[in-house]
Image 1 (cartoon, helix red, strand yellow):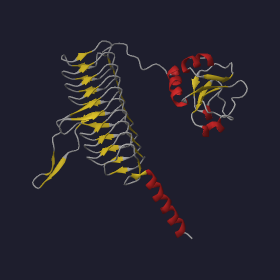
Image 2: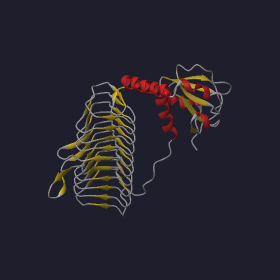
Image 3: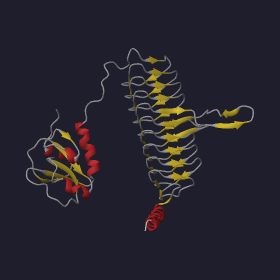
Image 4: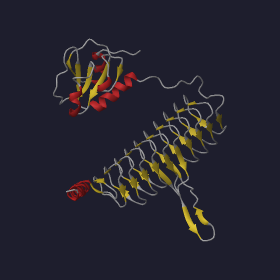
Amino acid sequence: MKSYSIEEINNVLQGVIFGSTSQNITAAEQLEVASHSEISFIGNKKYEKLWATSKASIAVVNEDISIEPGENRAFIKVKNADLAMSQILELFALPMPEFYVDIHPTAVVDSTAVIGNGTKIGAGSYIGPKVSIGENSIIYPNTTILDECTIGKNTVIWSGTVIRERCHIGNHCIIHPNATIGADGFGFRPCPERGLVKIPQIGNVIIGNHVEIGANSCVDRGKFSSTIVGDGCKIDNLVQIGHNSKLGKFCIMAGNSGLAGSVTLGNGVIIGGSASIKDHTTIGDRAVIGAGSGVTCDIPAGKTMLGYPAVEARDALKQWAILKRLVNDSKK
């Protein structure tokens, strides 16, 4: 079991210790359920009230905390407690699943595939013709990577993932279980003779560096050219990215959100959970789309949008307040 003193933990965080404790720490936990041997954090002043009843001996806190740690308890003050806790979690992280051989004997690796040094391929995986995988990547069991795909170095692809032909994934990416990269885009046109005619989807998907794609998410290939996910984007579970969409750098899409075809996101766009974006719309840099919102038109840079259909946040809040008053008045 890993165990650290407060001084050893602070050597990592480079914060300021306030108070003192002799208790060694063996795990991290949330305030309400933490034990004496666990460290927690207070990332917002509204949670200060929970410290009095918490059993945690140490908390990582923001510099503006207004309470005292108490006897044989301590705070480590940092500029950003949320970011600091990510460092703590790395300290206590358990090892990743082990590979006893670099390429499992049940994996099928085509003779034309190029596999980088240190890369590991798990049982039951299929690596197709002319695939290239960079150094020190991990392909977990039962993954499918089809013809002419490229995977960068230090990328992790979890079990059940399917990467269709000619798609490209960058360095330092994480693709979580059962994600599908490069499935056909949703393209059909009505035809009097044949009903719905399928439009061939002959493009691909290009995923940049340091991208994370959540479990059961789908990034569809372009009808022509590429669907693009820019460097540093973080995509949650159960997200749909439609064909020929283009995401800038460092975008966030929360669970159950979706982009229809040919949507363009600027850099740093945030899409809340269950939000939906109409096809052929453009959302500017650093715009925020609230959870459950429906975007039906272009959004300028920096705007925060709420509602269905989405309007500027301040207008949405005014509308909701008026509706609430009307409902209350109707009850009188």
